[in-house]
Length: 475
Image (cartoon, rainbow, N blue to C red; front, side):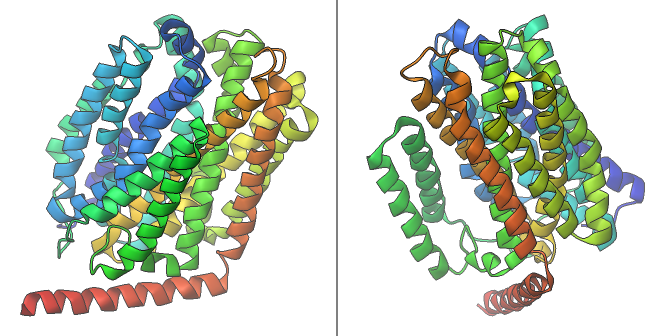
């Protein structure tokens, strides 16, 4: 891909961030609409979980396939296809007559969404070739992730109270159309120098693993837990034997890359569970409207808005370690206020929890993204970015599934409103543990030893890529 002017690079970054905005905002905005959805479509707690998880589950299952496909056939082409499918899925969701139909249409949305985030990150990585400029661009990207995830409840509340829950999906249509037209005009085509081969077996194993694991948690199914374990074993045995696997397990020899994967899962599990519990509490227990519930969570959105770009700049100047330590400490402390001190019962504690948790979440995105793609060969940028994006979606899926299952078990024998605070306590302890995991893994995988493993892994990948390319040319 030819070098672009600085102005053209910024325009490409803005277009990629538009796609990220609608994909991330859609899911968190829908959280605040869950009570309205439950009343209109007459669903239960499991139905609400599936409304969120059908989207994140399909997204997580297809992200790596989308990233490798974009590297092979063209990133711009896959990105455009994703915009069209996502907009179509959004339109179908806005017309859904039942909860079952909505869940199915959310899966269609996710098919399109899977072609946007990792592909956009790959476009950014290949557009900003100078390391410092790429770090700043990734910081902006991480900031948009944080802002869109945290601002979702406010936007969703405003739309639900003023128009209705279906308006959450209508918003995607003009933004998606604008991104489509701008992509056609300004985003150049790019692809990997040597296309990677498809890996249908690996893709099916990933889908079986994530789907069965989520079903096992939400529906308490030992059978599907066993299927998930078998799929994981299959992945670990099959993928290393392929020359060009869907998941290149050699990436995980890099401690920072492995750490970023674990941190992404933990951080987004915490966010998914935190939003799920607070949305239901504010509306079902306190009786607030969707808009007022969104306004209550505004401190979290504001802190994420402020600290996400600051984290990007901090990563560019000092590396990922300071941001990760701050993020883990703050997320754990924010959740601890709910787990140990029942912050829901006191407005000052409630808002303090939102402020601290929002600060932590704002700090975590930039180091995840930067660590995932830094040092990886540009030819595999799509796959590396897809692993990071997949980890985020897996985290959010598991957060809603696990915390929702714990909540459902706790309120099963009491009134949903009367027993909610006590029933949510184990969920908040789980979220606190996720924050502590971010802190500990961030500390372990961001030092000198960890950087050494990343450098060695990058050299091996580069050398293996050259040898494979030479072998392919000879044959």
